[in-house]
Length: 472
Image (tube, rainbow, N blue to C red):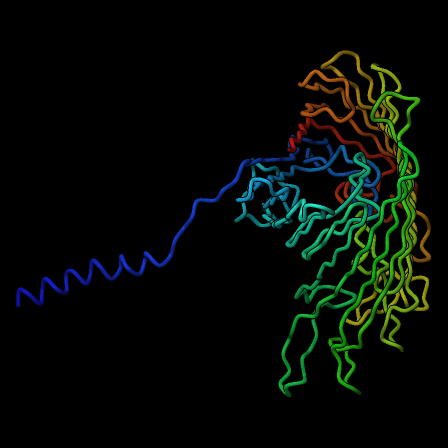
């Protein structure tokens, strides 16, 4: 009995040790860990409705286009690891990057909200990707896979990533001045309008809801024209697979569809001014299901408008997007940042106003918007700056009259790094914005501010805000 007990005891010790020994965890060989972050936070108010949290003054369906001084609390936190190859002579570098973002679905301040509150904090992971840079010793290229904020230039004062915002989950290769990528877009969203990213799978004979994927193929090419200017060419192809059987087209089950995007961007550094001055001009055309780019979000796969319900496609849909922005550092006392944004889109239905979608809902089938704005930064000293902004926006939904808004913002700013630079952060700002609406925008309450305070021709915003960023 004693022998059996000792044998069982030994087996209980040795076997788990043996099993665990099969899994060998080797310490990662990395040479650098980095962290980046972007955040804004503050307090804001007005004295309408017996005192309330301040609301954005911009027109509806424009996002930050029209000025972003009134934006709410937001946080991004990005972490990354650079791995070192085992072969010391290898030029390759591998990076793993993860980004987390936090924001409130309502206007609650961070300090007064949590993820359990109604309309409280939302947590997202917009980036988790692996990138191998410098693959190959003769002709180096980069390879990446995962979810990535894969985008180029932005108009910072309007928070608009124009021309080539290809953020999403996919994979890509970069070789010298050429970038080739594919992103996959699918979502089980029964509240979406058009086109639905789910379908009714009837091939098995049993109706079931399934995911439907859109594939977006992207090609970009940079061409150097001179030491201080370049052209970027853009081509996209979008395709949604065929989810339908013959004679079974329904609102949840309809034929395949596709679209194209063509774009051109010209960038030039301005040597007449202080370093960092430039001008960017970009134009982009999208057709079919690739006519997206509304509400301040420029991703072309966010299809706009209604389909043609006779042909069950977006063949006649289109969009135009034109953006020009510049930064001119005129002296160590003043910098000027300006932009112009124009968008025009139409869905595939014949109507120029409202049209029915696959789900029987009605949406505007045409829209046009135009915004011009500037920010002047006056450097009174290394640490005290004055930000002055002037914006004008107008938007037309369908055949409705134009909505119009003019806004001026003043922001005395403490730039704590003591740097006379338009991009210097952190900032501590006192913000005052004043907006004037035309009668139609006022009557239709066509602004987050007007939706809260009612029919007014004037709107205002007061706040104390902080903004920072730190990147590797």
